[in-house]
Length: 122
Image (cartoon, rainbow, N blue to C red; front, side, top):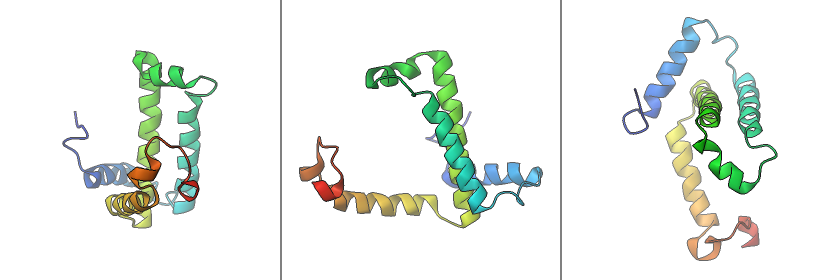
């Protein structure tokens, strides 16, 4: 079974693309539809955490049944995220690294450590 330690984003994108192409879903996989599907899947992931407190949310994945549900919804979110990047011609790694560099500027450790304040409130 593939894991984070031995699978690249490119391999995942290629696997997802092949799945879509084999089913002739390319016609439906346009940025608008993929963004909307991604939002729907994020909502489904959020449902697992609806109406529980912070501590319960930390413990949720200790329950094997709940963990499986969360894992499946997370997979859907990641699949649509990578499919969106592929269709839109975006390099996910480049986008993440660029955004992390920006976040590091906005949230310097000496100001942001232990704080949940937004960057313009630090």
